[in-house]
Structures are given as C-alpha cells and as structure tokens.
Length: 147
Image (cartoon, rainbow, N blue to C red; front, top):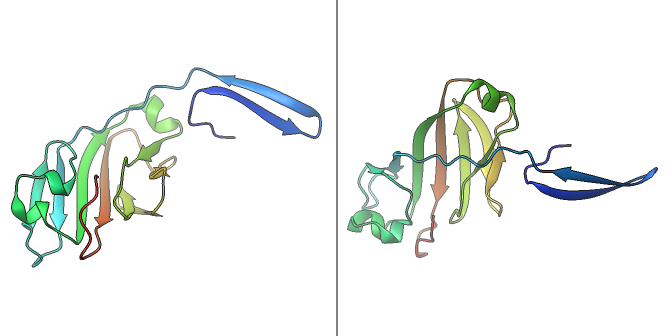
C-alpha cells in the first residue's frame, strides 16, 4: 500500500478492521523554477518564454501569451538526494487547464486530465538532476484557465 498523505486510515480486511496512523511523511517540495515554456509556433505567442514562477497565461504581461490558445510545453530541472530518490515520488501539477502529458528524464509518463492533476514518478527519478517536461493544452476559442 502507498500512502501520499498523513492522517489516520482505517482498513477493512477479512480479519477485521485495521487502523493505521501515518505521521512521518516528508513535507511536499516545491519545484520553484524557472520554467521555460515553448508555445505552438505561428499562433501569436513567442516561440518560448521563461516563467520565473508559474502563472495563468491570461495574467502574463505579454499580449501574445495572455491571449494564446494552443499548446505549451513547460520544462525545468530539480535535484533529488538519495533518500528522496529512493522513496515514493509524486509530481503534483497544481491546476491544469485541460490536459497535460508528463515526461521525466526523457521518459513519457502519460497524461493527466482530471484532478488531482498528479502523476507517480516512483522509479523514474534518480539521485541527480531531474528533467521535467509537461505539455499543457488550451483549446482554441476558450479563455485560458488558471495554471
């Protein structure tokens, strides 16, 4: 069994109820950035832009990004130590507009399209720099949502 949140869990088994208290999980780690974001060419946004922090496209100061409807690929790196890389690792994307596909260290981990907008990285990360790529899609003709 893998548990991602601290708390009290009650499980039913053929032998009866089992209570489990989980209170020693490490705190979540933020991936601060900067993030390089590449946009679909020819749709009004620049080819790429650096986001020091993740913000919704409709709040970006550049008009080409603020009114962009299309795909964007986010890329950044982060470091993991021995203990972190050997444990359960989950990437929580926050709020995604519609759908996101995730790649870590060149490995395609699939797509997420519903809350909680997270993907399991266990076994895909190592003790070193991790390369994360996340391709998000904003449908044409719909206003950008908070990312």
